[in-house]
Length: 105
Picture (cartoon, rainbow, N blue to C red):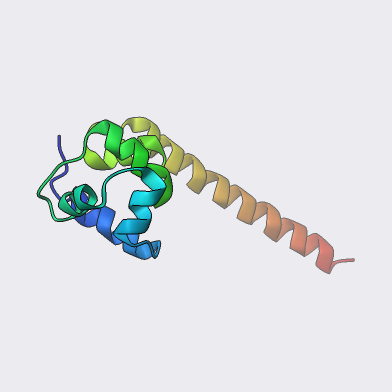
């Protein structure tokens, strides 16, 4: 399913990275006017164009393809998120225990 707000997301990311359209064009090799039409929603980028702009915008290829709707989010994303939450809890507990031991020295 295609993301019809993709241009808005990409523009917000570009602005957040403090890149002008000209700078993104130079970094990606994609024409400035085409990038502008993508951001305004007048054009939808191909997978090839997305791959070219992914790195300058700080996305992995998979992230930008999912954002565009070329790839569907899979359960792996959810599993990774749950694993990170679990690991964070375990690390916090371990650090707390370590701090208690240090305090007794």
